[in-house]
Image 1 (cartoon, rainbow, N blue to C red):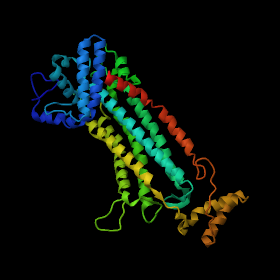
Image 2 (image 1 turned 180 degrees about the vertical axis):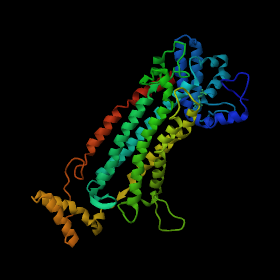
Image 3 (image 1 turned 60 degrees about the horizontal axis):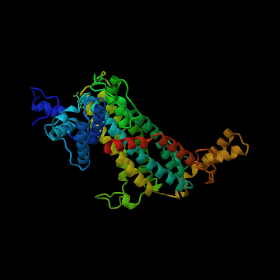
Image 4 (image 1 turned 90 degrees about the vertical axis):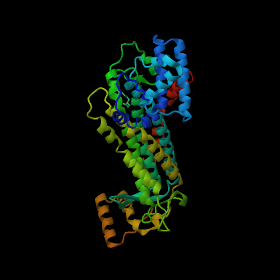
Length: 446
Ligand code: ARG
């Protein structure tokens, strides 16, 4: 039995139905909670403008709360013959409440419904990503502080270059996350605007109170222009994907460093045995698979903006079914990113560093610049000092002093971890998650 919201006197063939519904039954399940929340706000507003009676509203709200509970208990699914989550929720209401269920769609289209669902869902996902990013940030900063006194070689061209430290290495990735957090915040602020009321993309002749649904759902503002609100489909996903890709880029780079530094040829860091995996043939192997998988997954996530863009980029304004396909790449991406954030924080916490790498003479030459600077500080022109040390090295007479005195901001001896933490804190303070949480709770509990 088919239940198409738009069913009149003809039905699509089974082939057309299969192809157009596509993976919506599976993917719209992600949006189920948000769909119900959006409907709760919409019908509360409909009552305020006289399109539902107070009694009708209260039965509908009670049933929607019921459905919300079922969703959370894992007892909600989109049935065969039902196109999408929007149809399923409306069908459940009409099945259980009769004709009043058919009233909820006044002044709304599935186009603004899916827009608001995606925004509510993405807003919650971003909140989780922000929290997990902050946890990883804290782990990196903790390791940076713990190992701030341990030197390691720094490379350019993958050639031994200058002294670096584990404090710098861990701390660099923490600071990288502060920039990623700015992207997340920009994305979040764009997400946190209400498209509901744009209907099919051109508004409605009902006197919709869009400010009311904006407030009920805890949005900062609305997407005012109804045509623009619809244009946000695809654009929102693309911009959020840029933020996801930014975080993923940091993790992928960190993962590559970690794989390299964990190899016996470097042996800068070590993972406890229980954080590695073995080989079926080589009994000695302890492989850093977690970093290899986070690297691959995060490299894949960096393709997300391109994937979204290729689907939506050359569409004119107005709704198209093309937009449905974005859900296939966009929705599952959050689970993958969150998992990578969790695993990276987990393993960074357990990573041990080699406090004796610099005993190996292969790194002696990285102290050459220290020697040049010492001579220059004592009055020799820099270029002459450079030449003298270079000639000593070639003659085999250079003996390194394995000590560094780097004191300027952001250097080995002055990591500025506190300043970096303050930078992160400033950005976090500007999310105002509490406002959204409050609104959602109020709407849910009535
Ligand atoms: N499954 C559709 C999507 O994700 C829902 C909106 C359907 N709207 C329409 N005009 N056919 O885009």
